[in-house]
Length: 266
Image (cartoon, rainbow, N blue to C red):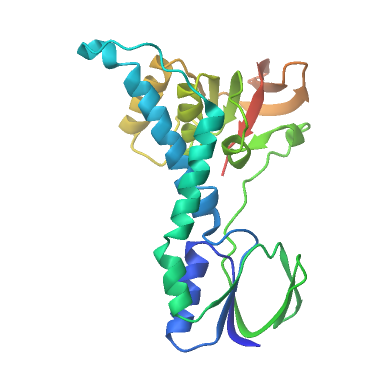
């Protein structure tokens, strides 16, 4: 029996657990997967490693403009994924949060799987743990929103995109916010043909209009097809080469084919 139980091992959960421990509470933290949550394992850490590789490729292709003659970069995606794993493991091993959590006396339960309540003070986890606490803090974050159209189960999320074992020949990216723009930019540099669809009038809608326009122009110059205000998606269907998206605007129906469709709508 603990005084405080925190469910969720991301930044919010870790900080809550450390604070409770520092204040003298007997504290436990349980996380579905790895310590660090999405930020360390599926968010900024792996994504920034992939983005760094994409920048290196773009920079290498510009060397000739500065009098530096080299051949076309040869890209090995499997080797890059190994580097991503190394970086993630290194961040976990040297996380200041992990040592601070230990110093605060927090008992950490990793890889517990999904947790469910059996009463107001007790949870049971997928791997069989039963944990009781006087107070329970939920810091479980969010999940990628799915589309509710026929065939939506055929699409992938950004998490699936980061976990690919090879670079698809082509990708439809649905959603032009920060996550969709990242997926489009990174895999465009890796050689995939990208079509970016944004239902609103501009990509990166939370940024200034000038920023949105500049990024859209840069994307188009780099070969990304940017479709803003494209209408609404009607359905997806499986094809021999991958997936087909059907969409329409003002009664005009169109379709787009790709090897993979990634939904990044929040």
